[in-house]
Amino acid sequence: MNDCPNADVRDLLPDLVHARLDAGTRGMVDAHVAGCADCREELALLRDMSATLRSRTPQVDVAGIVAAIPAHRAPVRRSWVGWRTAAAITMIAAGGSSVVMLRHDIAPVTDSLAVLPAVASPEPVSPSPITQKPRASQPVPSVKPVAPAVQRAPAVSNERELAMAGGTMHDLNEKELASLLRDIEKMDAMPSADVESPAIAPISPRVRTP
Amino acid sequence: MSDVAEGADEQSDLDLINRWKGGDQRAATLLVERHAGSVARFAASVGAKGDVQDIVQDTFVRAFASIDSFRGDSSLRTWLFTIARRLLLDLRRSERRRGAQVEVQDGDAVTEYDALDSVVADETRQRMHLAMARLSKTQREVFTLRVGEGLSYKEIAAVADTTEGAARVHYHNAMRAIKEFLDE
Image (cartoon, rainbow over all chains, first blue to last red; front, side):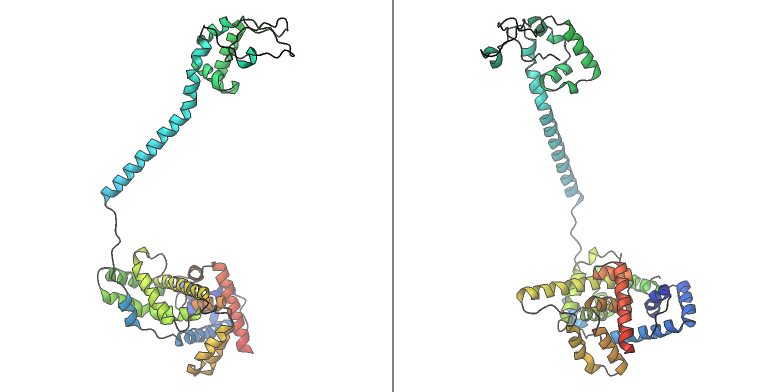
Protein backbone atom coordinates (compact mmCIF):
# COMPACT_ATOMS: atom_id res chain seq x y z
CA MET A 1 0.00 0.00 0.00
CA ASN A 2 1.73 3.16 -1.21
CA ASP A 3 1.35 6.76 -0.10
CA CYS A 4 0.16 9.32 -2.63
CA PRO A 5 2.74 12.12 -2.97
CA ASN A 6 -0.09 14.68 -2.75
CA ALA A 7 0.00 15.19 1.03
CA ASP A 8 -2.69 17.89 0.93
CA VAL A 9 -5.26 15.54 -0.54
CA ARG A 10 -4.22 12.72 1.79
CA ASP A 11 -4.77 15.07 4.71
CA LEU A 12 -8.35 15.65 3.56
CA LEU A 13 -9.34 12.02 3.08
CA PRO A 14 -10.63 11.53 6.67
CA ASP A 15 -12.76 14.64 6.20
CA LEU A 16 -14.13 13.15 2.99
CA VAL A 17 -15.07 10.01 4.91
CA HIS A 18 -16.95 12.09 7.49
CA ALA A 19 -18.51 14.43 4.92
CA ARG A 20 -16.84 17.45 6.44
CA LEU A 21 -15.72 19.07 3.19
CA ASP A 22 -17.45 21.96 1.50
CA ALA A 23 -18.66 21.44 -2.04
CA GLY A 24 -15.64 23.03 -3.73
CA THR A 25 -13.03 21.11 -1.74
CA ARG A 26 -14.97 17.90 -2.06
CA GLY A 27 -15.09 18.27 -5.84
CA MET A 28 -11.32 18.79 -5.95
CA VAL A 29 -10.64 15.77 -3.72
CA ASP A 30 -13.09 13.57 -5.63
CA ALA A 31 -11.41 14.49 -8.91
CA HIS A 32 -8.00 13.60 -7.52
CA VAL A 33 -9.15 10.34 -6.00
CA ALA A 34 -10.78 9.31 -9.26
CA GLY A 35 -7.40 9.40 -10.97
CA CYS A 36 -5.20 8.19 -8.06
CA ALA A 37 -5.11 4.50 -7.18
CA ASP A 38 -3.12 5.10 -4.00
CA CYS A 39 -5.70 7.56 -2.67
CA ARG A 40 -8.57 5.24 -3.59
CA GLU A 41 -6.89 2.48 -1.65
CA GLU A 42 -6.24 4.72 1.34
CA LEU A 43 -9.80 6.05 1.23
CA ALA A 44 -11.14 2.50 1.30
CA LEU A 45 -8.88 1.70 4.25
CA LEU A 46 -10.05 4.80 6.11
CA ARG A 47 -13.71 3.85 5.58
CA ASP A 48 -13.01 0.37 6.91
CA MET A 49 -11.07 1.73 9.88
CA SER A 50 -13.82 4.21 10.68
CA ALA A 51 -16.44 1.47 10.54
CA THR A 52 -14.25 -0.77 12.65
CA LEU A 53 -13.73 1.85 15.30
CA ARG A 54 -17.45 2.55 15.44
CA SER A 55 -18.30 -1.14 15.53
CA ARG A 56 -16.68 -1.53 18.90
CA THR A 57 -18.45 1.28 20.66
CA PRO A 58 -18.75 0.37 24.35
CA GLN A 59 -22.30 0.09 25.57
CA VAL A 60 -23.37 2.87 27.88
CA ASP A 61 -26.53 3.36 29.91
CA VAL A 62 -28.00 6.54 28.48
CA ALA A 63 -30.93 6.61 30.92
CA GLY A 64 -28.55 6.29 33.85
CA ILE A 65 -26.44 9.14 32.58
CA VAL A 66 -29.45 11.39 32.06
CA ALA A 67 -30.73 10.55 35.54
CA ALA A 68 -27.39 11.63 37.01
CA ILE A 69 -27.46 15.01 35.29
CA PRO A 70 -28.50 17.72 37.74
CA ALA A 71 -31.17 20.23 36.85
CA HIS A 72 -29.90 23.42 35.32
CA ARG A 73 -29.19 26.22 37.72
CA ALA A 74 -28.80 29.67 36.29
CA PRO A 75 -25.53 31.24 37.37
CA VAL A 76 -25.86 33.56 40.34
CA ARG A 77 -25.12 37.10 39.31
CA ARG A 78 -24.48 40.01 41.58
CA SER A 79 -26.88 42.87 41.33
CA TRP A 80 -25.77 46.15 39.82
CA VAL A 81 -26.06 47.75 43.22
CA GLY A 82 -23.55 45.29 44.60
CA TRP A 83 -21.13 45.91 41.74
CA ARG A 84 -21.47 49.65 42.11
CA THR A 85 -20.73 49.42 45.81
CA ALA A 86 -17.69 47.26 45.16
CA ALA A 87 -16.49 49.67 42.50
CA ALA A 88 -16.96 52.65 44.82
CA ILE A 89 -15.00 50.95 47.60
CA THR A 90 -12.23 50.14 45.17
CA MET A 91 -12.06 53.71 43.94
CA ILE A 92 -11.94 55.09 47.47
CA ALA A 93 -9.25 52.63 48.45
CA ALA A 94 -7.22 53.45 45.35
CA GLY A 95 -7.62 57.18 45.94
CA GLY A 96 -6.65 56.87 49.58
CA SER A 97 -3.59 54.88 48.69
CA SER A 98 -2.56 57.50 46.15
CA VAL A 99 -2.87 60.27 48.72
CA VAL A 100 -0.83 58.29 51.23
CA MET A 101 1.84 57.63 48.64
CA LEU A 102 1.93 61.28 47.60
CA ARG A 103 2.24 62.42 51.18
CA HIS A 104 4.96 59.90 51.71
CA ASP A 105 6.86 61.33 48.74
CA ILE A 106 6.43 64.93 49.91
CA ALA A 107 7.36 64.27 53.52
CA PRO A 108 11.19 64.52 53.14
CA VAL A 109 10.83 67.85 51.26
CA THR A 110 8.73 69.24 54.06
CA ASP A 111 11.40 68.20 56.52
CA SER A 112 13.98 70.04 54.44
CA LEU A 113 11.87 73.14 54.46
CA ALA A 114 11.67 72.93 58.24
CA VAL A 115 15.42 73.43 58.62
CA LEU A 116 15.57 76.41 56.28
CA PRO A 117 15.05 79.03 58.99
CA ALA A 118 18.29 77.82 60.55
CA VAL A 119 20.07 78.72 57.34
CA ALA A 120 18.47 82.13 57.17
CA SER A 121 18.70 82.87 60.85
CA PRO A 122 20.96 85.84 61.66
CA GLU A 123 21.69 84.34 65.05
CA PRO A 124 24.91 82.36 65.48
CA VAL A 125 24.49 78.75 64.70
CA SER A 126 25.98 76.19 66.96
CA PRO A 127 29.19 74.96 65.49
CA SER A 128 29.30 71.48 64.28
CA PRO A 129 31.16 68.90 66.32
CA ILE A 130 33.86 68.85 63.67
CA THR A 131 34.61 72.56 63.90
CA GLN A 132 34.15 72.58 67.65
CA LYS A 133 36.79 69.98 68.29
CA PRO A 134 39.67 70.43 65.88
CA ARG A 135 42.46 67.96 66.14
CA ALA A 136 45.62 69.53 67.41
CA SER A 137 47.77 67.56 65.04
CA GLN A 138 45.99 68.87 62.00
CA PRO A 139 46.32 72.38 60.65
CA VAL A 140 43.09 74.22 60.91
CA PRO A 141 42.20 76.69 58.20
CA SER A 142 41.19 80.12 59.23
CA VAL A 143 37.68 80.82 58.35
CA LYS A 144 36.14 84.23 58.26
CA PRO A 145 32.69 84.80 59.67
CA VAL A 146 29.93 83.94 57.28
CA ALA A 147 27.13 85.80 58.92
CA PRO A 148 26.47 88.18 56.00
CA ALA A 149 26.17 85.27 53.61
CA VAL A 150 23.86 83.46 55.95
CA GLN A 151 21.73 86.55 56.23
CA ARG A 152 21.35 86.71 52.47
CA ALA A 153 20.00 83.20 52.36
CA PRO A 154 16.33 84.27 52.33
CA ALA A 155 16.90 85.78 48.89
CA VAL A 156 17.49 82.31 47.52
CA SER A 157 14.41 80.79 45.98
CA ASN A 158 12.59 78.05 47.80
CA GLU A 159 13.35 75.47 45.10
CA ARG A 160 17.03 76.15 45.38
CA GLU A 161 16.90 76.04 49.13
CA LEU A 162 15.23 72.72 48.87
CA ALA A 163 17.92 71.48 46.62
CA MET A 164 20.73 72.82 48.75
CA ALA A 165 19.16 71.57 51.94
CA GLY A 166 18.42 68.03 50.91
CA GLY A 167 19.22 67.60 47.27
CA THR A 168 22.21 67.95 45.00
CA MET A 169 23.35 70.39 42.34
CA HIS A 170 21.80 68.10 39.79
CA ASP A 171 18.40 68.95 41.22
CA LEU A 172 18.72 72.58 40.09
CA ASN A 173 17.58 73.83 36.74
CA GLU A 174 19.68 76.29 34.77
CA LYS A 175 17.90 79.35 36.07
CA GLU A 176 18.27 78.31 39.68
CA LEU A 177 21.90 77.40 39.12
CA ALA A 178 22.68 80.79 37.60
CA SER A 179 20.94 82.53 40.47
CA LEU A 180 22.90 80.49 42.95
CA LEU A 181 26.20 81.32 41.29
CA ARG A 182 25.34 85.04 41.38
CA ASP A 183 24.62 84.80 45.08
CA ILE A 184 27.86 83.02 45.72
CA GLU A 185 29.83 85.65 43.84
CA LYS A 186 28.32 88.32 46.05
CA MET A 187 29.39 86.54 49.19
CA ASP A 188 32.12 88.29 51.13
CA ALA A 189 32.57 85.69 53.78
CA MET A 190 34.06 82.89 51.78
CA PRO A 191 36.37 80.80 53.92
CA SER A 192 39.98 81.22 53.09
CA ALA A 193 41.97 78.34 51.86
CA ASP A 194 45.02 79.67 53.66
CA VAL A 195 46.09 78.24 56.94
CA GLU A 196 46.70 81.47 58.75
CA SER A 197 44.90 81.26 62.01
CA PRO A 198 43.69 78.46 64.24
CA ALA A 199 40.72 80.61 65.15
CA ILE A 200 37.57 79.16 63.86
CA ALA A 201 34.44 81.13 63.57
CA PRO A 202 31.11 79.38 63.68
CA ILE A 203 29.88 78.49 60.24
CA SER A 204 26.56 77.27 59.21
CA PRO A 205 26.78 73.72 57.97
CA ARG A 206 23.90 74.48 55.59
CA VAL A 207 25.86 76.90 53.43
CA ARG A 208 28.03 75.04 51.03
CA THR A 209 30.56 76.33 48.63
CA PRO A 210 30.27 75.11 45.10
CA MET B 1 -12.24 22.03 4.98
CA SER B 2 -15.40 23.29 6.52
CA ASP B 3 -17.70 21.96 9.13
CA VAL B 4 -20.67 21.48 6.88
CA ALA B 5 -22.11 18.46 8.61
CA GLU B 6 -20.92 19.48 12.04
CA GLY B 7 -22.32 22.97 11.63
CA ALA B 8 -25.83 21.63 11.37
CA ASP B 9 -25.20 19.48 14.45
CA GLU B 10 -23.80 22.40 16.40
CA GLN B 11 -26.95 24.39 15.74
CA SER B 12 -28.97 21.55 17.09
CA ASP B 13 -26.64 21.05 20.03
CA LEU B 14 -26.95 24.68 21.04
CA ASP B 15 -30.71 24.55 20.56
CA LEU B 16 -30.90 21.48 22.74
CA ILE B 17 -28.71 23.09 25.37
CA ASN B 18 -31.00 26.11 25.47
CA ARG B 19 -34.03 23.86 25.69
CA TRP B 20 -32.48 21.99 28.60
CA LYS B 21 -31.69 25.28 30.31
CA GLY B 22 -35.35 26.11 29.91
CA GLY B 23 -36.30 22.97 31.83
CA ASP B 24 -36.71 20.49 28.96
CA GLN B 25 -35.18 17.25 30.26
CA ARG B 26 -35.85 15.54 26.94
CA ALA B 27 -33.23 17.81 25.41
CA ALA B 28 -30.63 16.39 27.79
CA THR B 29 -31.60 12.88 26.75
CA LEU B 30 -31.20 13.76 23.08
CA LEU B 31 -27.76 15.25 23.70
CA VAL B 32 -26.59 12.21 25.65
CA GLU B 33 -27.96 9.85 23.00
CA ARG B 34 -26.17 11.83 20.33
CA HIS B 35 -22.75 11.97 21.92
CA ALA B 36 -22.46 9.19 24.49
CA GLY B 37 -21.22 6.66 21.94
CA SER B 38 -18.47 8.95 20.68
CA VAL B 39 -17.36 9.77 24.20
CA ALA B 40 -17.35 6.08 25.12
CA ARG B 41 -15.27 5.17 22.04
CA PHE B 42 -12.85 7.94 22.79
CA ALA B 43 -12.59 6.96 26.46
CA ALA B 44 -11.87 3.37 25.43
CA SER B 45 -9.24 4.51 22.94
CA VAL B 46 -7.34 6.44 25.61
CA GLY B 47 -7.31 3.63 28.13
CA ALA B 48 -10.69 3.34 29.86
CA LYS B 49 -11.53 -0.30 30.40
CA GLY B 50 -14.18 -1.36 32.84
CA ASP B 51 -14.87 2.20 33.90
CA VAL B 52 -16.11 3.51 30.53
CA GLN B 53 -19.65 3.96 31.85
CA ASP B 54 -18.38 5.93 34.85
CA ILE B 55 -16.15 8.10 32.69
CA VAL B 56 -18.93 8.85 30.22
CA GLN B 57 -21.44 9.58 32.98
CA ASP B 58 -19.05 11.86 34.85
CA THR B 59 -18.24 13.61 31.59
CA PHE B 60 -21.87 14.48 30.96
CA VAL B 61 -22.56 15.38 34.57
CA ARG B 62 -19.63 17.79 34.60
CA ALA B 63 -20.47 19.15 31.19
CA PHE B 64 -24.08 19.90 32.10
CA ALA B 65 -23.04 21.31 35.47
CA SER B 66 -20.83 23.86 33.74
CA ILE B 67 -22.82 24.23 30.55
CA ASP B 68 -22.99 28.00 31.01
CA SER B 69 -19.25 28.16 30.38
CA PHE B 70 -19.72 26.46 27.01
CA ARG B 71 -19.92 29.27 24.49
CA GLY B 72 -19.89 27.22 21.32
CA ASP B 73 -16.38 28.26 20.29
CA SER B 74 -15.64 24.57 19.82
CA SER B 75 -18.11 21.82 19.08
CA LEU B 76 -19.94 20.27 22.01
CA ARG B 77 -18.42 16.90 21.10
CA THR B 78 -14.89 18.30 21.20
CA TRP B 79 -15.65 19.84 24.58
CA LEU B 80 -16.98 16.50 25.85
CA PHE B 81 -13.84 14.73 24.63
CA THR B 82 -11.69 17.24 26.47
CA ILE B 83 -13.61 16.72 29.71
CA ALA B 84 -13.49 12.94 29.32
CA ARG B 85 -9.75 12.98 28.71
CA ARG B 86 -9.11 15.08 31.81
CA LEU B 87 -11.33 12.87 33.91
CA LEU B 88 -9.49 9.80 32.75
CA LEU B 89 -6.11 11.36 33.42
CA ASP B 90 -7.22 12.42 36.90
CA LEU B 91 -8.58 8.95 37.56
CA ARG B 92 -5.37 7.26 36.46
CA ARG B 93 -3.34 9.71 38.51
CA SER B 94 -5.32 9.01 41.67
CA GLU B 95 -5.08 5.29 41.01
CA ARG B 96 -1.33 5.56 40.69
CA ARG B 97 -1.20 7.46 43.97
CA ARG B 98 -3.16 4.71 45.66
CA GLY B 99 -1.02 2.11 43.94
CA ALA B 100 -4.13 0.31 42.91
CA GLN B 101 -3.29 0.24 39.25
CA VAL B 102 -0.32 1.20 37.14
CA GLU B 103 -0.70 3.46 34.17
CA VAL B 104 -1.89 1.79 31.00
CA GLN B 105 1.21 1.40 28.92
CA ASP B 106 1.29 1.21 25.15
CA GLY B 107 1.92 -2.52 25.25
CA ASP B 108 -1.10 -3.11 27.49
CA ALA B 109 -3.34 -1.99 24.67
CA VAL B 110 -2.66 -5.22 22.81
CA THR B 111 -4.21 -7.18 25.65
CA GLU B 112 -7.06 -4.72 25.83
CA TYR B 113 -7.82 -5.16 22.15
CA ASP B 114 -7.22 -8.89 22.27
CA ALA B 115 -10.00 -9.17 24.81
CA LEU B 116 -12.40 -7.72 22.30
CA ASP B 117 -11.27 -9.89 19.43
CA SER B 118 -13.90 -12.48 20.19
CA VAL B 119 -16.64 -10.06 19.24
CA VAL B 120 -14.98 -9.15 15.99
CA ALA B 121 -16.18 -11.67 13.50
CA ASP B 122 -14.71 -10.19 10.41
CA GLU B 123 -11.09 -11.14 9.86
CA THR B 124 -10.20 -7.86 8.20
CA ARG B 125 -11.56 -5.90 11.13
CA GLN B 126 -9.74 -8.14 13.49
CA ARG B 127 -6.50 -7.30 11.72
CA MET B 128 -7.37 -3.62 11.94
CA HIS B 129 -7.86 -3.96 15.66
CA LEU B 130 -4.45 -5.51 15.95
CA ALA B 131 -2.99 -2.76 13.81
CA MET B 132 -4.52 -0.19 16.14
CA ALA B 133 -3.17 -2.05 19.13
CA ARG B 134 0.35 -1.66 17.80
CA LEU B 135 0.10 2.11 17.76
CA SER B 136 1.48 4.21 20.56
CA LYS B 137 -1.06 5.62 22.98
CA THR B 138 -0.85 9.08 21.45
CA GLN B 139 -1.03 7.78 17.90
CA ARG B 140 -4.08 5.72 18.78
CA GLU B 141 -5.77 8.68 20.43
CA VAL B 142 -5.12 10.97 17.48
CA PHE B 143 -6.06 8.33 14.91
CA THR B 144 -9.30 7.54 16.71
CA LEU B 145 -10.27 11.20 16.82
CA ARG B 146 -9.30 11.79 13.19
CA VAL B 147 -10.64 8.64 11.54
CA GLY B 148 -13.20 7.39 14.03
CA GLU B 149 -14.74 10.75 14.96
CA GLY B 150 -13.75 12.94 12.02
CA LEU B 151 -12.22 15.73 14.08
CA SER B 152 -9.98 18.29 12.44
CA TYR B 153 -6.36 18.63 13.51
CA LYS B 154 -7.27 21.83 15.31
CA GLU B 155 -9.97 20.06 17.31
CA ILE B 156 -7.65 17.15 18.03
CA ALA B 157 -5.01 19.55 19.27
CA ALA B 158 -7.55 21.08 21.65
CA VAL B 159 -8.66 17.72 22.98
CA ALA B 160 -5.24 16.08 23.24
CA ASP B 161 -3.54 19.20 24.56
CA THR B 162 -1.06 19.35 21.72
CA THR B 163 -0.47 21.34 18.54
CA GLU B 164 -2.08 20.95 15.13
CA GLY B 165 1.31 20.12 13.64
CA ALA B 166 2.00 17.43 16.20
CA ALA B 167 -1.47 15.98 15.70
CA ARG B 168 -0.87 15.82 11.94
CA VAL B 169 2.47 14.06 12.44
CA HIS B 170 0.93 11.55 14.86
CA TYR B 171 -1.88 10.83 12.40
CA HIS B 172 0.44 10.20 9.45
CA ASN B 173 2.78 8.09 11.54
CA ALA B 174 -0.20 6.04 12.71
CA MET B 175 -1.45 5.67 9.15
CA ARG B 176 1.96 4.50 7.97
CA ALA B 177 2.22 1.98 10.82
CA ILE B 178 -1.24 0.58 10.07
CA LYS B 179 -0.47 0.22 6.37
CA GLU B 180 2.78 -1.55 7.15
CA PHE B 181 1.04 -3.94 9.52
CA LEU B 182 -1.70 -4.73 7.02
CA ASP B 183 0.87 -5.25 4.25
CA GLU B 184 2.77 -7.85 6.27
